[in-house]
Length: 443
Image (cartoon, rainbow, N blue to C red):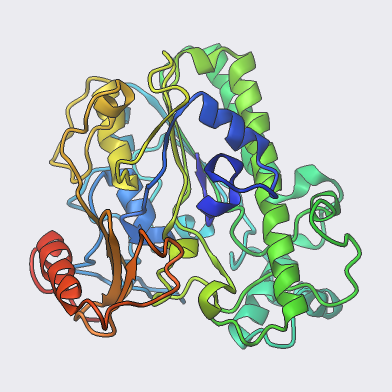
């Protein structure tokens, strides 16, 4: 289960005390919950490559920009032909492999994320999906859902989204998170009748923007009948295009979207339980990255803004035998650990080496296969690394370095690089260059 753009600090089990996430909070009591997980790369597509292959995508060597794309961060490309996906391996081992998603980037003509799935169900219409002609979007509805400071790209995002969705929404089940999880619930019913082992990937684009959940969710955190235009999409930029009221409203809409996604994940898990699948199914629930909502002066997902609101994800592993249930681990688990863990649990050998590691020992209360004393991740031409004491953010050439003392400043608000140049050098050379295998590519 992937929940796109879900921030760790917006989940009750991770310490949030004002956003309602009862499903994820309850799931934490039945799972091994990682307290310091990170994506190995950002944003959506590089992260998905790591999930599906168990291979690191950072430092984005041999990046090939895909034809027809409008968003070009480094590493944004299809699964390379010389890499195998976990779905391909499981399909060869007689699993029914099923992929249900509304994350429209994965089913663009240039992509191939359905490789290895004998069933793939693409739910059309999210965000910029070219599903309906833009000119069919009522202009008054477009303007109702942008703020004066939104840039042209974001206005056009809203225009496409309105064209895709305005004509059919009458009940909650017509929103995207419900549609994704309802489709997944239907598959569970089919699987119960078939009795075949299955590998199911449910990849929900929510709570990614656009943030326009039904009013009942908005009412949990703010005015259901807000008088101004709704900031349902953020610019990927500095946040000074928003006034305080608009920024507060944006945070309200995001919180409401989180609660809606949590509720429909809960409906899906209830159906799993009713059909008996929680007794024999290994479950992963994770996010791919977060999103900035004005913290540190940014909104959206800006490559230089590698602060906790963007880098910190959720990561749960629920074992059907209760291994690790209700426990936590501070191991730097990551999304490229999923594929090797699945194969190890099924006693299947990978077809090629994977960079991630099997998390089974941690589920069993043991130490990891290999210690991770630090972690590195990349987004476009910026890199983040951390250890127990410090976090470093800099460009791919080591310039523009920012250093934060996590013991004194866990929110990463005060740059101390000027006081500790030797720490910056140590982390750059010993973590970034070492993990990257040499100098990082420049694009």
